[in-house]
Length: 146
Image 1 (cartoon, helix red, strand yellow):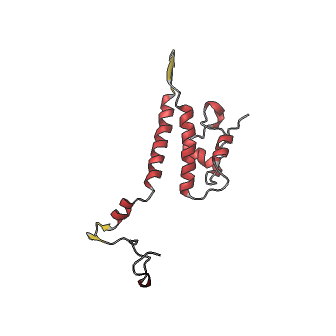
Image 2 (spheres, rainbow, N blue to C red):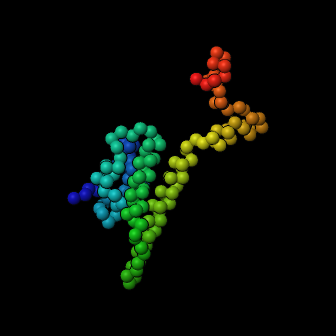
Image 3 (tube, one colour):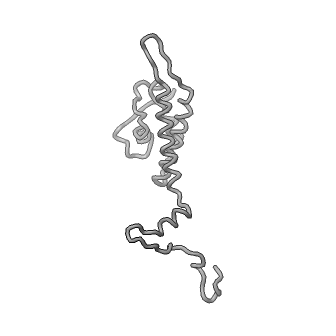
């Protein structure tokens, strides 16, 4: 049977509880009815060792993808005076996924980003980039890269 636990004192431990906190999946009292993922699913997605903050964000993106796929089929329905807007939850997870995916895609360095860093808007001057073609050349090699 799946477990649904949350310990707020462990939200800095880079584990299940921190992921539940960051995703807002902390209402564990209702079990499967209120939680997006069970403890075993979080444990399977989160490795024992987190290499960097970017690695944590990629794991978070994986959790969001799993949650998003799980809730994508939910729809709104009304039974008498009770109205259930389950699609709103799916939209919330999708928005979180899209924001994090966009953030992770922006952190990659491109040649355009390197060139734009060469211009200093405060001074209006252009500083040559640190790296350039032929920087590993030696006079003895007659301009050929090593």
